[in-house]
Amino acid sequence: MIESPDSSGGFLHKRIAYINDALQADPQLIRLNQYRNPANVHAHRDTTAMHLHRQLGPIDLLVVGAGTTGTLMGCLEYRRQHRLDHEIAAVDAIGSVTFGGALRRRFIPGLGTSRRPEIYSEAEKFEQILISETETVVECRRLARRYGILVGGSTGTVLEAVRILGA
Image 1 (cartoon, helix red, strand yellow):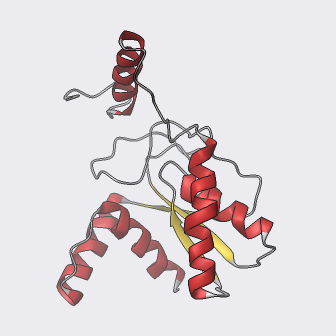
Image 2: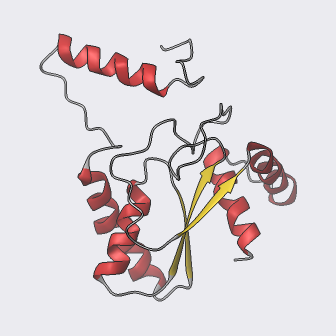
């Protein structure tokens, strides 16, 4: 259990250091590393994006939480490979560095990262949307009050972006 924050105020860098130490101590351990591993992108290209396309047919807009960016990059790759023309909007938390913003301490787990994923690329066109933690909490509470649905931070952040986009 990593209980104290790293120098960025988060826990990710300490978690990664812990994993790296464990890998050195035990050569039988492996790390899939979803931030760097192209298999993350390929899995979402070959499953998530493919299933969305097959199940929904043509769409106008796909809104994706950024996270490790595996889903985002996979959906962008699928769109390009299949010459689809829908828009893709990527959503992240204010304070995350993925889109090049300034690092800020975040309190809601889910989206947002204190390091830019190596698999992330801006080579293909997509919209970037940043949502504050306050907006996330308001959206989560709105969903609970209106629909009786309890969602976590990632879902609340993405649904707030959908609401803002008017989708």
